[in-house]
Image 1 (cartoon, one colour):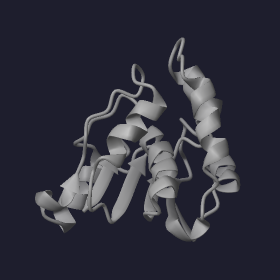
Image 2: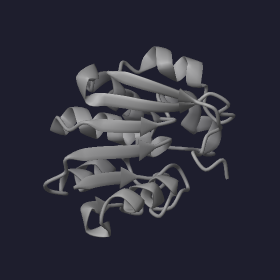
Image 3: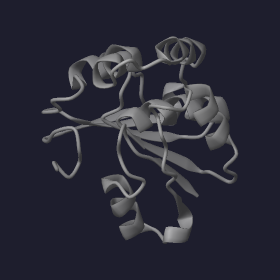
Image 4: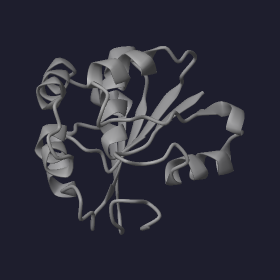
Amino acid sequence: MILNLHGLNGSSYNTNYKLLIDLYSKDFIISPQMDYILTSPTEILDRLKRYKDIDYIVGNSFGGFYAYVLSNMCNIPCLLVNPCIPPERYIPFLVEEYEFTDELINLMAENLMNPNLVYMILGMQDDVLLPVYTEQIVHTTKVWKIQGGHSLSNN
């Protein structure tokens, strides 16, 4: 099973989901709709840990942050697409009065990753997050740098 995590204010039927169902059966993809703004990060991770038989996690943007942390917690490989890491650098500016910044900082500090579990795709023209900074922060097995912006579909 593949767990697909959308970005901030995104949809569970995001570009990554559409690409995954072209490769795998819909029955092989779990893509929950998440309310990242009103739900605490710890509660989100507790919900995500309930999914069983997950072989891989794919996360886009803020979903990439959750994929990164969950990958470490559960020892599951992840593919991050323009991940929002570190989230405390971006989320307070993207979400007015976001109340969980301290929780995000603690989760990053507690979950130092095994780079052997982390793969990443960076759109080098991302105008939402800084791909050069993200590449310095996230230790990975492999990084693919592509032409393009924040969304793989450039929408």
